[in-house]
Amino acid sequence: MIATMGKILSRYGTVFLDGLKGTLWISAVAIVFGTILGVAVAITKMSKHRLTRMIASVYIEILRGTPLLLQLYFFWLGLPTLFPKISDMSCVLIAMVINTSAYIAECIRAGIQAVDSGQREAAMSLGMTERNIMFRVIFPQAIKNILPALGNEFIVMIKESSLASVFFIGELMTSFKVVQSNMFLAIEPLTIVGLIYLVVTVILTQCLKLFERRLKAND
Image (cartoon, rainbow, N blue to C red; front, top):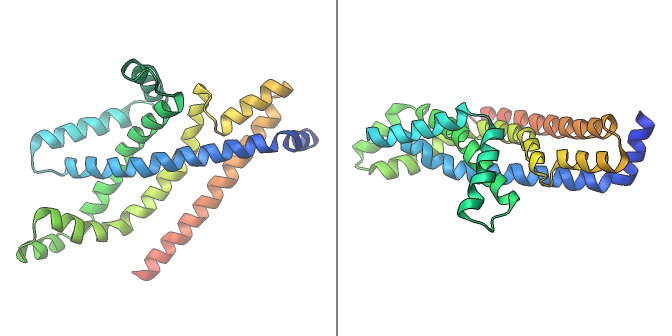
């Protein structure tokens, strides 16, 4: 088996490398834009207006309460009816951005609420507006609580991006399908892909732990 895996890597190493690049790119895009959308959703959920809080809560519950694969199919089938020229990659990316925004919104909300309430009261006593309090006082302090959670979400997204292979998007599991169809082998290329996922997630997890230790040291 090891010899066969070596042959596969020698012939299709670039295919797996391209798949890894695709996985990291998809995950990074989902996290970056999911964070931007998640900030808006988190702020909406903490609004003083009941209707806006309710809309944000429904948004989060729907996305967290349904499988990502279902959401991928929903956007893959639904978006082309509105935008006929949209690509499969765009549909998948939009679905992943929206999905991860719900989880990130909860991370951001928890991070903001973890900031001592006295900070808000002190800022209000100085006459600062609610907007300035949020972005100049609360949010900068909440970042330390949010960043580790965002790192964990990035690691989760790397694994969840494998679902994009259903639509033959260029990522690691798609690389497995390419090699499998060319060599008529399943276990060996699947093992290679599994090892790549494992190595990447272990490295990122260790980097995240180091980052968290440095944050605690700074505190």
